[in-house]
Length: 91
Image 1 (cartoon, rainbow, N blue to C red):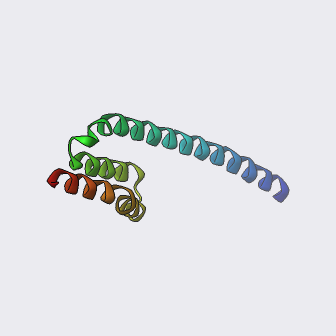
Image 2: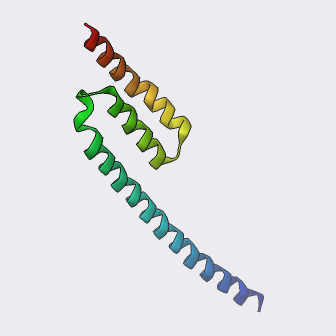
């Protein structure tokens, strides 16, 4: 009797885990699509204003939902570009 109970529990776990994997794939696909949309809209006007770079990072951060990692990426990649834009505009 108990052996059959374990089989039922195992079957239920497989169904649930398969459903969760599918859900994770869907969420990952949605994030990819949103990031592509953000890139398509905000990357072309980067040379017009540093505010587009900042908006790009904010929107990507909202999609990814990892604030510390987003802040580190912003400091590493975007701040040098923004400084370059500001210094280049004043020169």
